[in-house]
Image (cartoon, rainbow over all chains, first blue to last red; front, side, top):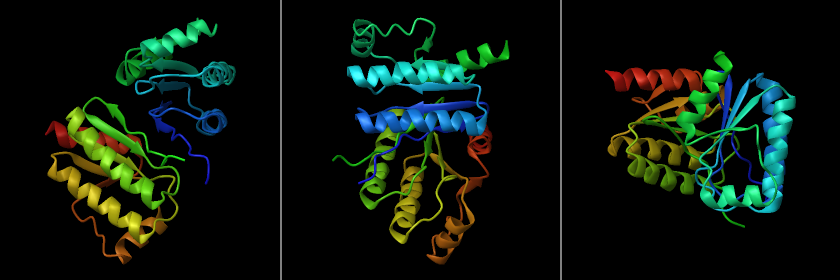
Length: 121
Length: 121
């Protein structure tokens, strides 16, 4: 069976990704590759990654997430993370993934607003 | 392995779904169930289903799609289909799935606009 892939939606100059189920390692790596390709292909200047439905995150997925945010920035796209649940926040900090300069927001709507404001400046 | 599921994003009063890879039967049925649950749970009044990246569609998937549109309507949500490719349009018509009273639009942005206008009326 193929690796399931996470759809990436394009809305105006932003990409939207909603991770709604626990990722396995292969899907996470595929997502990393797909997102970077999509940024390149669409010239998107912002990305919202919504984690509202993610209850837990393991160290590998946390690392992939940290990496993809860094990579997106290198490519010129701002990333906003939304809907981080308590357990996920705890894991990220405990693993030393501080995401210090990443914007966060409560939900997808607010994430998009934040991004539009930043990009509008 | 679990059935891969299609993420459903909520943006304001609309749900966004982007189908970016060929669906197998199980995933399509799971999507039908997930979408109806999500409409119920969020009270969304519109749904945009984006098929931009779908090249081909078989008779089972076409039927599930036709069904889910009808079901969403029954639940009070307007559906807009976007990005239907030529081969998909041909298959739908040849299978007798006319989707006569379904709004369509070129892409996700235009689909959302159409929906916002309709809902605003």
